[in-house]
Image (cartoon, rainbow, N blue to C red; front, top):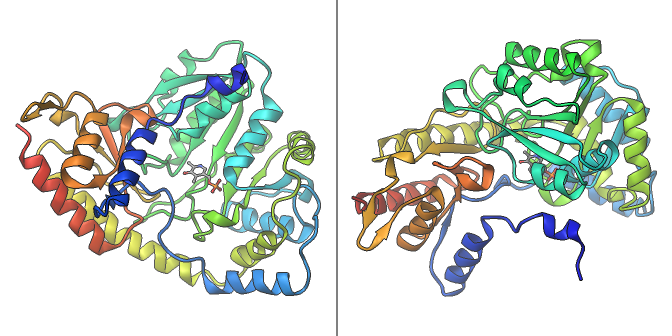
Length: 396
Ligand SMILES: *Cc1c(COP(=O)(O)O)cnc(C)c1O
């Protein structure tokens, strides 16, 4: 029998959709995917070269569990340069992707029954990781009119003597919204008042548009820094999803607990990927700027086009590469014998009718929305929008 732990997490609500999309592709149907969660750009050449060099130099053995000192130092430099944060080497751990970093945090922080506050809509792995580590996810709804930022009063209402931590994710997957300084300060005050940890997932830090700036909550004061674990990685900023490099910066006792756990589970992240990560952090950033310009162009196009569609409403996301569209206006519409009762129904309808795959809001704890990723070419976006438009016209 499998463990109760394993049965605690449900298969992703998008699995059925994915399976269906795969089936259709296998039948030779051209499915356009708005579902992707990774940049469609290649890893920049200078980063690949650094990996090849490491490989040729024989840097192919175990490394220190929490990462090579050279990479930790590059991360320390990055955090000071970009975020105004001063850390020491022993306050850094490198793991097999930011997802693994977050998992290590849950392992290091949670005792059975500990509650973790997760603003909804949320990234799907947050509640699953809390559950897998015997914790209790506690959701706090956020609303479109607040740009999906955590409302301080609503946050405070959910705090109990079991609350251990709050997760924030700015820029956000799935909403693309970001926290401004004022809202971060309000959250920091509450965390300090109740002695809670903040887990700050900043993986989309570099994907930010217009004149918006990313602020790390840890940079607000020394007090909040001592309660924050900053999570970041190279998957999104440097198109390195397959390399599996993520990292955390935080109080040394938490980092050493995470390192101990990592030493008994995965050991070090891949040696050559670590050397490549140094180049990603310290080398030229032109590829990132180019990627950002292209994402920005697509973002504007997609929002404008979606807002023209009947029943769709979406605000301009400020970061990441997702548009989170409100489709509650289509609830109750029909096409033939088919009735759209939920965002999952809509997603399934668009897949079958328009051969377009996207993720229903239910997956992120936000019924009435759909998430579209624009990490796909402009050409595909054009075609996808055309198809969605046609299918929506058929709904009455
Ligand atoms: C992609 C993503 C991550 C983790 O990415 P890794 O590839 O594991 O580094 C973490 N948080 C959010 C919100 C993401 O979208």
